[in-house]
Image 1 (cartoon, rainbow, N blue to C red):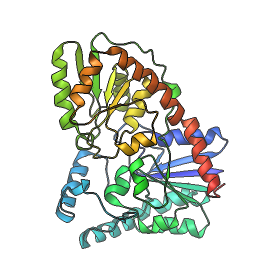
Image 2: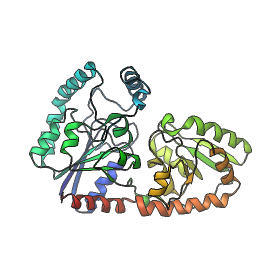
Image 3: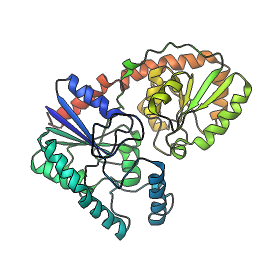
Length: 361
């Protein structure tokens, strides 16, 4: 069986993991990305398309445009709907995507022919996107009888919405974001995949307890609350605060692995609970601190997290610092839990179960 992934970028390296998982089952897997990732993950077949980038200037410009057209919080403004549906916010935006589809088509059509992209048996669309905003490639896939799987991450449904032509054609929708189960009438949960075998934690505590925070987006992670509390705590002398930001992934991993505690997020602005940041940290054997809403606690009642919020973060961290045995307890439990739910060998079993349930294989 031949499996194809199409994604804007290989954001946190999961495309590489899925490729390994499919190939371990004797299948062929290829992933193609639209532009290079800002981190050092394998981009697969990268088309390097123009007019879109994973850099701060592009993101800030888009945010300012959305403030003008959407109002409120701009790029952070949540959409209503079940599911929320994407549509141009202005006549200018409509014309922009029409132009971009036309402009991209010269590269995209050559790639479709060169790599035989219509010859795959299952096509995964990461972020619920394909090459074209009007869904013309998906329409060709459906005409050819190809099964389509859409993977939705946080902002795909929270602030953008489904692309109508793609949503209509999709045979299976999956997400690793619990709150998105309430944003779409037909979507399945899939724990984020991770290769836990790459880490062999020693579970040794640092003499000076190292607390790290590694935000990809300070607003979504609630960093304006987390950073001052950690900096104040670090004045105690037996605590060091490490802010890991805007660094290559390999360097980030090395620093993170030297820490005892990771603070993921509070305020739940970019989704509920936790993401790849915590998955990676728990695989390394760190104690993970994050905010879990009641729905998440009910969904994962055996979780290993230290559950905090903006009001009690300082108190909870102080409690850990004076009780290092508690830190070690969470470190060991987190490592066991992440293997059970997030290891790529287990998550691939769940995905193939969804394939069978939907008659894709």
